[in-house]
Image 1: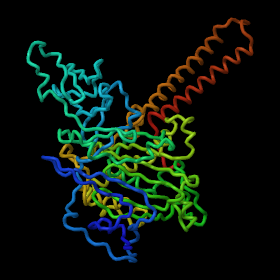
Image 2 (image 1 turned 90 degrees about the vertical axis):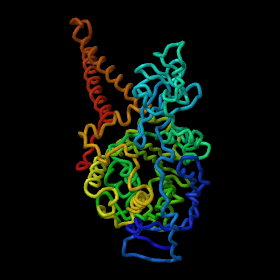
Image 3 (image 1 turned 90 degrees about the horizontal axis):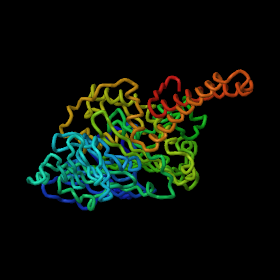
Image 4 (image 1 turned 45 degrees about the horizontal axis):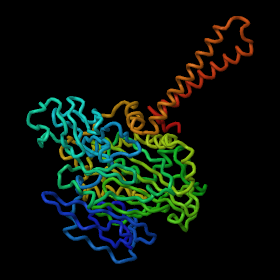
Length: 539
């Protein structure tokens, strides 16, 4: 087997046998007036895959014939950003009674539930009349999407159903092509709404030919999946994926929040217990790559999906101490997963849809509300948010995305996945997301910390569980304050001798306790649902 250094991962790609068949291709679909459509990917787990391991640049070994260079046609292969399925939002967090505004890969879309067809629809978020956002509209009593600027109504196919200002006995101007709204193909899979970012009619039935990558564990009733959440982030898609592929930062950036395995004293060099990590990367091609870590298999399915299996069987190691360092506590013969859907929104903005399905301790999800899980998940995202926000701006300002490898020194195996992603991005994706000229390339300025770390607009409002908890807990705060005031008023209004001293003391104690509880709960609500900063100096 040929061993490559991390720096060599940025050189021209290699071709290797792939027993996993991780990127088996379906026949390419040819559609008139359209470039190539990316093939459907199918991934299967295997325990005996050949891997390419990233090691230090000075180490080169070979136990198998060298891999052959790919042909010229392979080197010219290009990743088509607008011929892919993109996740939009978790369906459980979408309200069927109103339209929702979302932005994906620079496209403003409106998501709404068509009760006439019992399906979610994704339209361009712009009324053809005067370009008002349809996401600010409503769903009328006939189940049509209505623009609230002038009342124009649209059906499931984007056709205009009604123009209030048109005369009833005049020509049917609502049937004109210019009166229609652009409709994007969409589908629901794994509890996620997906859309195809091309409204050309040729793609109307694209779902029957190409489907988003399927993860069966997300639909398996034997797996707990209440941790599913969505979050908007103040840094870009590229930095988001790199961060999720980087296990080495966990004990440092998330110290005290995320629990890793026990580190034996003989391996500890610092408080956090960071250690060398064995990460192997299979060949990088236009569809992504597969990797193997000591605790399980990892897959990057371009452009959005990165997921990993955590299993004692998959993580079997001859070095018991090393496996204990990395492997989180999982019952024998059980499986847990990390599923990340990384969505480009705009330069400097991204969206993460995150799930941790597991087939053990499922009973906890029947007891613990979903929003409780989101507290810790939001804290994890907040604890390295500022680091990534600044890192992205330094990279763009100093060297630009094409020169990432010149600015960053990545000599260890723990960086193999990040290097592989940058290699994929540089080789096939044009070094960055193709925004099709919608942006200048400049990142937005750094906002105040209260805005950068905001949780309310980036998560709470869009989460059905957290938004309900936020309203109910605020109602509880008001109730506690009312009880506190009423208790004090009762003591003050009572005539001398009307109530006993013991009763007076009880009412006064209740007033104090309710007041203190309301203050504590208000602080908890603010930190949980609105804003929580993170200071690494005192963690």
